[in-house]
Length: 460
Image (cartoon, rainbow, N blue to C red; front, side, top):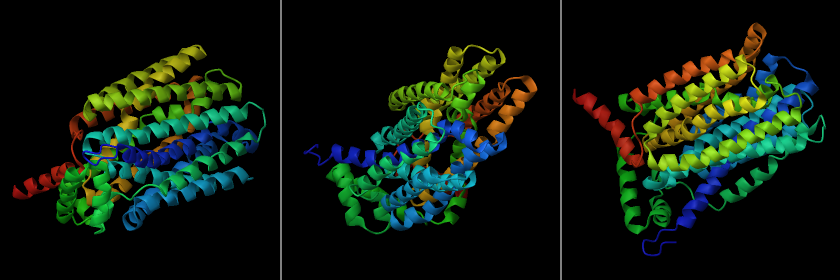
């Protein structure tokens, strides 16, 4: 607590940590399937096409979370919307653990995906709206760190439960989801509502109280005035998204989020056990264990990303990461075409994963939480996030089919990584040409940036 300025950093970090548990559940829920799929395939005996459906069922549900969230978050607030996400997570955990048919299982995964969609939209938005401008990038990064921790923890749990050889261990894998969900829902009762949402609802006194605890009295008054000034300039309706400047921001956000899912790095993470089996590992438990090593690597890279975001520009990091992903996918192609040892396969997988986790993974969420004007942020993030999940579902659905096609035609799946290398090269050019810098700018400054583009075009 900084008593001179009235700032409680402890209070701020508590709020951010609770909101970031939504990121933990995001990573945990979507990654449980990576180890469980080996046992699900054995029990239900489905084709590569059905594998894509099972793997993508949660992702298919994800867009419905933001579609609901765009109304719910603006109507009842960010905190209560996250509580709803927790309820969906819990229902999915119980339903998946008890399912006795693959379509029933996929249906409950769909419900969990709706929770992921809500949490992935509202958690970073909530953090961005409550964080001071100079800390916003690092605090939104906590969400991405939580995603990485959730991902790693789920794969570790998969490995522990797979060691006993129980063919139905996958049920316990999904049952474990209940514990972090309870922590999340209890924690939400201890945090305040977003001050920017409170101000938009006319609850100015409450908004000022939250801002004062986070920013101090003097800065709180200044931030509140900026929020109110911007709210006067915005209608907040979907029609505002058609304004040329805001429309450009929306297009950039959609393109960035789609790029973050079709770059191939998430497929390496999600399908790592089956890719390792394709590379020569026969035991399911051993394949999952090697995936645990990759998850440890993800956590290390996520920690380093905090430093990168503090020191370098958003655009510079994304451009550098794009080059790294191109190189990483080329290495993956060479690794499979030359049938190199498992240790080399793991090393090759680490390159694109590191490039993604250090750059595009966290920064795509940071940028879309920063880039939009306050009153349309919820709606714009909904559209961008829905686009992301649609791209993720299509990629997840097609990956096993295309992977097996290359394997059938050429004896190995390496060709798919050349496709990803081309996509990453295109994404790098997009960032270089179109993405504005958002680092150290207040949310209100970014809102005025796009509205000024509209004024400049009108003047012409």
